[in-house]
Image 1: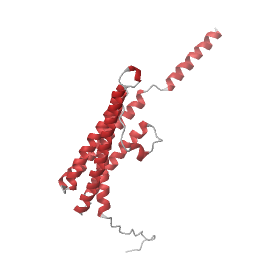
Image 2: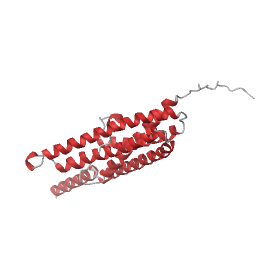
Image 3: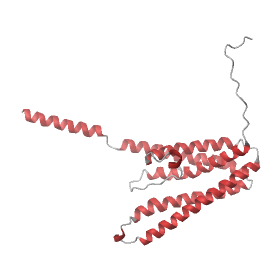
Image 4: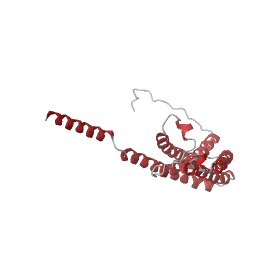
Length: 229
């Protein structure tokens, strides 16, 4: 057998730490579920005509706040699917059950804190709204409850649910993790599809400036023709 002209590249065998894999798995699945859940409602909100908007937690921090809201929402939809795929792949690579338990304990604690923060926000908004009852206060009650309170309620509910699921996995219930990896990817995929569709619809539902400029130019031409008569 003839030798190759170019020496083949020898890739070093990298042994991944199972604790790292378990940590990435827990972070990916929980973020795909949490952000995907919020992305679903954010995508639905873009179809409404009442000015309803839902913020996706962590999206601006991960993607960058310098992008517009629509761009951040579009990027977060794709990002949640990537998280779901990573969670699906890494779940099958975990061989140390103790590493799995430890990682999901951290995830449980993190989402307990997130749920507590969202509930505190809800209470604060409710108190603020009650203090601003009346036309003289200038508080837009509809906007406050629809955009702020409802968004926090959705986030709090998702965080509580994820904390319960994380607690079950931390207790060693591998069956829950086996199901949850597909659930997370499914939720992320639905959110991504809604965001992509709503973005395309919003792009092409707006009137283009080309039509307005062409109509104005045609009217100016008609004016010139009138002067020449």
